[in-house]
Every structure is written in structure tokens, then in C-alpha cells.
Image (cartoon, rainbow, N blue to C red):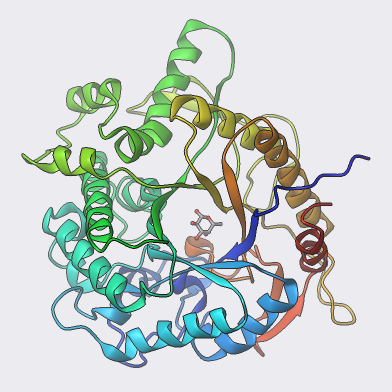
Length: 448
Ligand code: FCB
């Protein structure tokens, strides 16, 4: 057994998102979000679960920060609920919403935990959805205005900003597949939305840079998948390239190279009637590259030519192996392959792993602890492949485990548990899992 030690300044953290943990949806002037609307629509979320109460973190944040401190977290990634700040999406700011994040950030800093703040983790103000949401070009401007207001009030204490979390999911899970809010099923619309998301990202970066922070950095978090062809046939290889364009390059290229990949632009123009790109949009995107890449890695995709996806013409193949409760393959090598590829194709950017983790069938709490050896192994294997990539020169400077605690897992409601900490939703009790204890040791030793 070899010892794995991470670089001296490596940052160990954990991540959550507003709608998944906060609850308190009608408090202190918060407006409605598209996830309130979606989760309250019958049939959209397993068991009809909603984020109304979730982990009640809005009221229990002090207790949660205490747990973070006990684990030894050096940084905590959370998101701001836009409808708490601008209940109508724009216009008048809600001071009580700001106050909550103010308290949260101060409490983190007092406990020596560095905040990493995501501006958009999917809870768009419903009022903006009512005027087209992300399919409306103006929403990019409203996002930049919201971002700028936040930078001004919290920017003195926050040094890591993430504009968007997983724009692929917002665009395609939300507007093509319909399994996320706002629940549309229109491929052209989804591609249009993706452009407005990337534009809004660039506008927020522009607003941040104008404030000239000496210490802060702003990036974007993408859900990336290494894509492998099921065979080395020409057809499968070509298919893998296309799927890589759909999932990865479509977002990586504008964020880091200032343009959309030409093959995908051609493909969408031929098959769909989007994206419509207004004059000036690409100039803003090109002038405002992200300063770091946040990677959310969960699994790989193995693809072959087929017709399960009727437009991209591919099927997904499920290789033999271990699968999580989400039916996601456990494939730590994929993270290594992905990191090496980013280094090569995107000029070795600064990277944080902003999410990685797994849902498994854990034990029930026994004598105050939940046994979750599968999660512990999962994390260990992914830390190992990351360490290998770091050794080979990939510039990964931190790792945020998804998630600090069990929470509202979107369309799966509360049925999937990703936490290091177990939540008893009846009593709101927080119970340590074995993996949290193990993670505490990893952080203490900066390795294992
Ligand atoms: C990611 C999301 C995060 C969480 C994990 C499991 O796609 O960013 O909120 O749901 O998946």
C-alpha cells in the first residue's frame, strides 16, 4: 500500500446547493423559483418531494458549520438562491436575503472555512421564467446584474466565485429532456438556452473583472464526462466525438477558447434552428474567459452509433462493473483520463474538482453512526486517480466532495443520499457517516 500525499496547499472541501438544503422557501421575502414550481407539479419529483424544508439549513447553518469544522473542511462550496436576493429576478434587492448569506459567510470565516460561492445552481426566479427564462436573451443581463450586486456586497470576503453550475443540465436536462425545471422538451430551445447561459457567464466574469479584485478568482463549473467509443470502428469513434461535443466541448470551448466548436455549430445549424447568436455576443464571450474550471465528475459514458438519441444518433453502453444507486458506473480512471485531456486540450487551466461523490444504500444509523464503506471506497479511488493526474502536472488545486449532507436530489427527491453526513428528515438530526470520519483523517494528513 502506497502513501498518497497531496500538494501542500491543496484545498479539501465539500459542496451543497441552495435549493437542495436550505428549505425556508417562504421566509424573509424569498421569491418563487422554478424548482418550487416544478417540485410542486404532480409527477415531476419522486414521492412528490419538494425543497420546502429540505435540511432546514436556513435555520441550522450554525450547527452545519460546526460539523464542517469538525470534519476539518478548509473550504465550503454553496450556492446563493437568486430569488432570495431578487424575488422578482431583477429590480429591487431584498436585504433580508443578503443578510442570510452575510451571516453564513461570516460564520464560515470565523471557523476558518473559505467560502466558494456558486451564483446559479438552478433556482431561477419564477418571475423570469414567466418572461421566457433562459430562452430570453435579456436573462443574461439580469444574471449579470444579480452577479454584480452580489460581488459588491459579499466580494470583500469571498475569493472563489462560480458563475454557473452545470449549464449542460440547465439547458439539456431542463429544456430537452424535461426531467429538470422548467421541464421543456425541445432540443432547439435547449441549444438556445445554452448559448444564453454561456453569454451570461461571460457577462458575470466581465462584471467581476471590472471590480478589480486583487485576491479573488471567477470560474465556471461543468459536468464533464470522458466519452469512450464502444469499439474502435470509424462509426463509433465519430459518434464519441459528437457526444463529446454535445456534453463537453460545447461548454469548455466558449469558456476557455472564446468560441463554440465549429463541428457542433454546423451540426446544430443543420439539424435544428438554433442557436441564434446576436451581434456582439461572441465578442463578450471571447473577451471574458473563465479563470478556473470547476469539474463535476461522476461517471463516464461509453457510446456507439445508434438511435436511442434520435438526433445525435447514439446509444449508451453500460459496461460490466460496480454501479451506484443512481445507476452510475463507478469509474475512477475516467477522472484521470478527463483531467489529462483538459490539461492537453485547454492549456493546463487551474482546476478545482467542485463535485464528486456517490449515492449508495447506506446502513441505517447504528449507535450514532452510518456505515457507508461503498462511499468511502468510491472517494478513495477518485482521490487516488486525481493524485496521479496532479503528479503528472494537471493543475488541480482543490476537491469538494458532493455532498456535505444528504439532501434534495432534484427529480429523485430524498430517495438518493449523497451525504458525508446523514440527515434524519423526520427530526433533522445530523448523523456522521463512516466516510465523514475517514475524510476528516484524509484532510488532517493531506492524504492517506
Ligand atoms: C450534480 C448536481 C448536484 C447534485 C449531484 C449529484 O449534477 O450539480 O446538485 O445533484 O449532481
